[in-house]
Image (cartoon, rainbow, N blue to C red; front, side, top):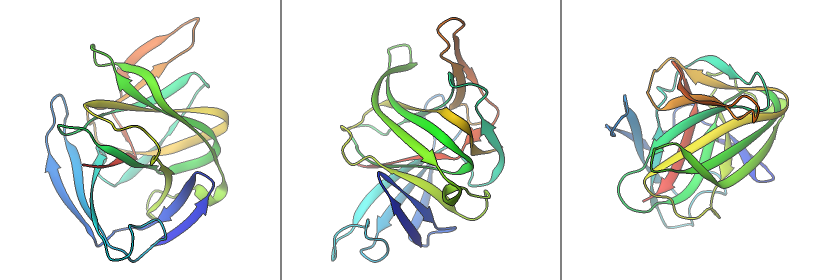
Length: 209
């Protein structure tokens, strides 16, 4: 496993972690959600759990781990949004990871959910300047990882939105039509609500139960 630290994030290169056990779970309104029950050993990157201990994590994902194309952002108001439904109870956010296809500046927002199941107010906003070192070819196991250790506990439905703020960044997506991936345009003069997309971003949310 290769972990390259940068302020507020790191790049992780791990094509097929041997310590990850997949468990397929169906959630309401979802085509399929994949929860990975992860036992994190003390060896590895410095970001792993304390020596002598282990922990259990849930990796919430709707992709099939096979990047087939990229998602670009036509404007700075265009946003790619993924809906995550957490298991019952509160969960401590750990990390958010995605695969970058082209460099540029992006903004990532973690939203709560409204009673109508649309993105609510932002819980946390992250800014990322993707460099050439962050870029994946979609097959090399390279992920950009954002630390969410200081984010408040999450419960129920959580939305994660990605938009560009400068340049022409893009992220990888798979061919799965998950029913949990959407696009919207937050242009105040011509807004567009959530529209389902046929492809699902390579975007994963990791929490501790």
